[in-house]
Amino acid sequence: MSAFGAMVWNGFREARRNRVTVVVGAFAAVVLLSSTLVTEVTVATFDRVLTDFGLGMMSLILVFLTIFLSSGLLSREIERRTIFLVVSKPVSRTQFLLARLAGNMLTLAVLMTAMMLIFVSQLVLFQVELNSVQFVAAAGLWFELLVLTSAGILFSSFAGPAVSAIATTGIYFAGHLANDLFDIARRLDDGAVKSFATALYYMLPNLERMNFRPQATYALPVDVSTFFSGVGYGLGWAALFTAAAIFIFERRDFR
Amino acid sequence: MTAISPDAPPIQVRGLSKTYKVGFWFNRTVRALQGLDLEVGPGQIYGLLGPNGAGKSTTIKILMNLVRPSGGTALLFGQPVDRAATRRLVGFLPENPAPYEYLTGREFVTLAGQLCGMSGHELDVRVKEVLGAVEMGAAEKLQIRRYSKGMVQRVALAQALVARPKMLILDEPTSGLDPVGRRQMRDLILAERDRGTTVLFCSHIIPDVEALCDRLAVLVGGRLVREGSVRELLSAQVPTVELVVEGLKMDQVKNLGVALESSQSLDGRVLLQVSDSDSQRLLSQVLAAGGRVNSLQAAKFSLEQLFMDALRDSGRTTSVGGEINT
Figure 1 (cartoon, rainbow over the protein chains, first blue to last red):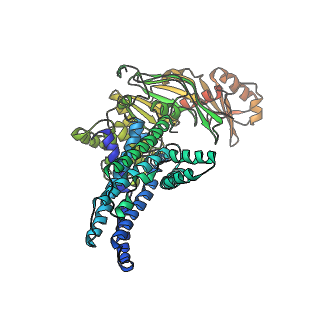
Figure 2: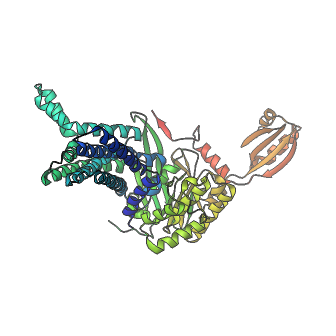
């Protein structure tokens, strides 16, 4: 295995050994309970509620986990001084950072796959029709998690885990409210405030562009160009956050 | 980019300085290193000795590219320290090493080997070999979070040795070890030197430095204050004599008019240290004043004395820390 591959695998192994996989169990329990509840309280929209709740819960759990993992990805290594024994080897800091990012995304991909299996099993069990948009929504979520992970890594390259977690949570909420911010900016009369709100919209990642959960809930098709433009947009933001993190991390002293 | 030259001196440091900016607004500075010059030749065990905050660990962290220098140059095997490939030739044991606790000892040393480009059967064999050398073979399948401090130190040494480095950089390798562990660590370092490995060894445990090092640099307050082979440095010390005197009080002894290197009261006795040339005069003065000399012996030349002399000569009022500017 190459040095980079070894670091990526180690990141995944860290999450597994620290029992991060327990979130899959939590998801299974919530999905099971919810489906029992949903069968009791819904009449006609059962399919939609089950899909909406399943994908929404998956998103909530994985976003929470992403913020928790990514906000300490670098800062915990520096605080605990585990980084000394890695970056003193013939690997560059950039390689280390990218491997940590890739390890985190591998962990999230494995967890998401396990959650999707549970989700699909639930839909099959309740004879809800499966459609491709449910999988498109899951793929979009993964790219949203990539943006959040790279934002978390950026904050963690210069701040402690608590500050990074707060800032990444801020990015998450602002990212999902970005469309509202843009609408508000359009309706404003005051030129300066309008410019400020518009500038703020462009300075924050619009996470709604990767959110295909509403379409999955209503079984509406997502055209290929919409999906790939959302994915490209997410990759662009992730690249920007990662480049900034590398810039800072390459110049940091590890005392 | 020039190739790594294994024939170049393992370490060359010229005018190295490091100033840390501290405080909430980064408006205070601590000068941890000031114009350090060092050269470590192949096959040597080179000691860095100094009190806390002397700049030893900062020097090592610059060499391992963990800290960026503020000025000067640092080369490993003729290459800049920020070149990742150079570190393939170096094994590093930091002070209070912190390996990944969720890994077993074997997994951690394997990871270290993989980071150095090793793989397959060669890596498996080498991991087994180094874990055996540090006597961790029996505990290799335990997670590191269950290790004692001494076991962590041993597995961290194993990861430093796994890629057969041409140079070892060891920061306080014996701190926290019991006497047996210290002895084994010293034997391992000597064994590595016998294989031709260069060792840069930093400690404030003087007996370890004295037992291991061929050459030595003493740092105080970020400055180099002594440098040379251990033999040269010890032979440059002024020979002194120790006397234990009874029947005289400290102030009476101090009024005898002989310059004392040191003096100390012990249970009604006075322990004096005086230069060899003044010893006969002090002896006769003590006897003339009615005192009795209990013992008289030549003081052993020691690194401890050298260290204390260096500290005194540096003119610093405290041994601890770098130079702080507010």
